[in-house]
Length: 73
Image 1 (tube, rainbow, N blue to C red):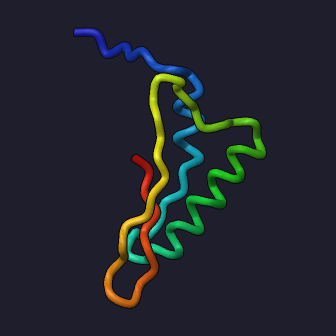
Image 2 (image 1 turned 45 degrees about the vertical axis):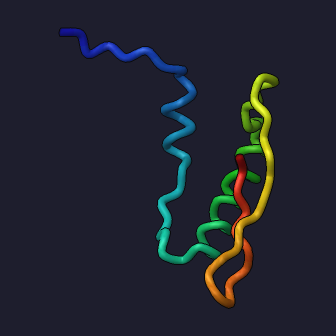
């Protein structure tokens, strides 16, 4: 059985940049992810797009007293 894997060679480099974060703090997690995405964009790595996929940005109500939660459909 072969252990060869076929993947984009940039994936390993990209994956090693992902920060580890404590998901129990949603606000802090959003800040970390935004900073990470900003850093990727600054280094020339942009989010892939597909003309065949429509994206819709919405929000859903958060828990009582919390802000709405942004979602992408």
